[in-house]
Length: 267
Image 1 (cartoon, rainbow, N blue to C red):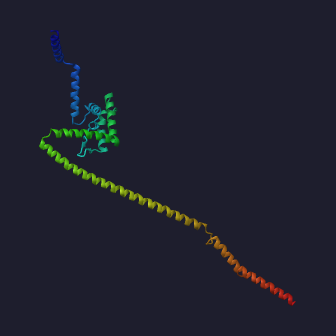
Image 2 (image 1 turned 180 degrees about the horizontal axis):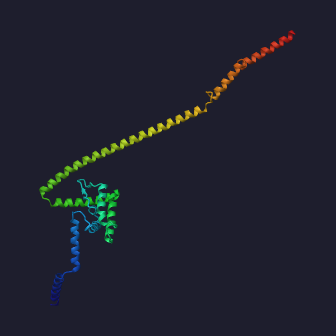
């Protein structure tokens, strides 16, 4: 009897408690509903909702939504696809920064939103960070695509699979062509580098030969010819001026000596 009464009391108490509205739960549900609405919002960010939407996107880690840039997609090979450039990111940043810039909007919430906006901007401009964000976004995009395919009819799935197969072939063909082009570009680059090196070596050698020739010309005496040639010519000239070579001069001296002796004998 006591147990039955206890169970009945507990049931009534639970029903009464459920019937009494919980202010905190009601507020949490309201906040969640508002956040879900903002997540689904596709209209441009304005000054009225900039702080809320930037803070929410930052908390979700969705920097693409934060800067109101297109969401990355995933191709049939599982690779991320995103067509935005650095210029697109910069334009989006400049457009949103006016709504939360501390010089234009007062308050801590705006200042914090401005810092969050800056962090998102920096990471989307950093190649390494961007690669990580794109990979993460590609995983999410693939999951959404699989959900859509699961909800499709059999006929629709057959058509989807056929298109995906055809697209995979096309992408692999493009990938192969791109790889071959890259190899050819690398080979051409190496060929050009080898040509530049050969030209540099040839130019260096020509400079060296020119410097040696110039040094040789500077070492010659003013009269022309080497010092050895000049000395030889001088010696030859002296020999001719003195009556010929050294042996000829010696013979002439001997003849004069003999003649002098004969004259003495006759006297």
